[in-house]
Image (cartoon, rainbow, N blue to C red; front, side, top):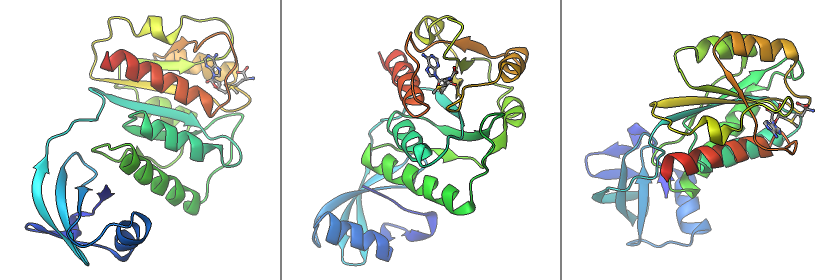
Length: 232
Ligand code: SAM
C-alpha cells in the first residue's frame, strides 16, 4: 500500500516516485506485474499493477476501514520523541485529526522538521494500518486556541488522571454524534486553570481508569475505547 499525490495520477496510470519505487521493489521485494494498492489519502483506493516506474489502475477498491465519525485528538506536546508514538498509535486506531497543543506544563514549540517527521509517521502508519485517509496533523496551537478551534463539536472530553470523574466508556454510552474531540495532557498533567477553562468551554472531564497512564499510553487507551464503542 502506498499513498500518492494528485499530480502522480494521469487517467488510469500512476507515476511512481523514486521513494515509492524503492519501497515497492527494494523494501517489499515486489516485481513488475505484481499488484499493490494505491491510496489518494482522502478515501479512495485502487488495485494497481506495477510497471517499473509507473502503475496501471486495475480497479477501484471498495473497502472501508475508517471510523464512522470524525475523531480529533488534542494532545499536549510531551518532551523527547514520545509524540512519535502518539502519532503512530493514534493513526493506527483511526484518528481523523491530530491537534498538537502547547499547554502550561509543556511549552516546547516543535521545529518544522519535527512536524514534517510526524506527518511522515502518520502517512506510514496509515499505509501500514490499511486506512483510506491519512490523518491531518495540524500546526501546534495554544491550549486556548485548541478550545476555540474545536468549539463547534458538541462532544468534547478532557482526560484527567485525578479527581475520579466519570469513565470515558460511561460517557460514550448512547453516543449519536458525527464527531468527537478527546484531549490528553502532558507528563505533568493539565493545570487546574486549564481544566476550568476546558469545562467552561463545554468539555466534559473523563477518566481512563484508576491507574495513571503515560502521555503516550493515554491516547492509545482513549482511542481504543472510542473505536470499540463506535465499531461494536
Ligand atoms: N501527574 C499527572 C497528573 O496528575 O495529571 C499525570 C499526567 S499523565 C502522565 C498525562 C496525561 O494522560 C494526563 O494529563 C491525562 O490527560 C492522561 N491520563 C493519564 N492517565 C489517565 C487516567 N487514568 N484517566 C484519564 N486520563 C489519564
